Structure formats: C-alpha cells, structure tokens
Length: 154
Image 1: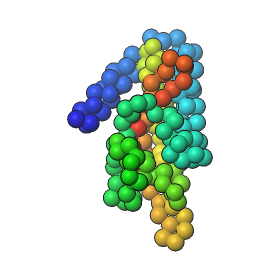
Image 2: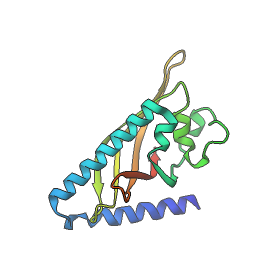
Image 3: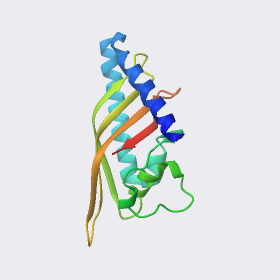
Image 4: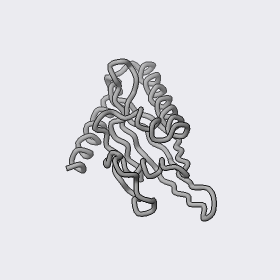
C-alpha cells in the first residue's frame, strides 16, 4: 500500500512539475530558490537538532521509504516506523548531511521537489560512512512555508 501511495505522489508531482512553464519565469525562479532554501534549512535543522529538527519539516503522514536498513542499527522503539531509514541515520553517533543540487516546482507553485546527495557517517573506531542520492517532495503550506510530503533516499 505504501508503494502505491508513493507512486501516486511521484506521478502527480511529475505531472505538476511539467506544467510549471506557464508561470511567470521570475516567479518560477523565486519559488525554486525558496524550495532550495527550505531544503538547506531542513538539512541544517537535522544536523543541529537531530530527530527533532528533521521531524519539524515533515507533514503528517509524510513518506520516507527504508533502503539501507541492514547497514544500520535498529531504530529506537516508539519512533514512527515509516521514517525508519532517516531515523536510523539520525541516531546518536551518526552525522547526517545532505546538499540539494536542483529544485523544480509545479505551475501554481504549490508542489515541488529537490534532489541531491546525502552522506551519513559515524566517526570513531570502524568509521562507518554511507552515501547516496535523495529526492524530497515538498508541499507549500497555507502560511507560505514548505513541508516535506515524501523523502526518498537511495
């Protein structure tokens, strides 16, 4: 069921993004920059405040699939299961960071996505390091802020 929800979200986001060309070009660029700034703030909040900072940027019901589960220890009990992959990367001892490369927005500027690269490392003996790419789908909120509706890492 989660896979189906994710497919629907990605399809709608892709369809909406393909329509953005009818927006005022200045508004498109301004909205893209807002989205890139939101992603940078998201990464900074997660780096500085860990789980609390990460969850602050998610909408209720946000999707975050779980690749690379076997490479990391179990998430603490009681944490939201659909965010396990990132939760595991946000555990004490791990340093998670990411950098957006590009953002795209839908025609009305209400949905968009960012993508880029992430890295998680655990310093110390046996220095473990994981890397990958990501795509985050965002929805503009009534207050003008952007919140994550799906976060996909690979």
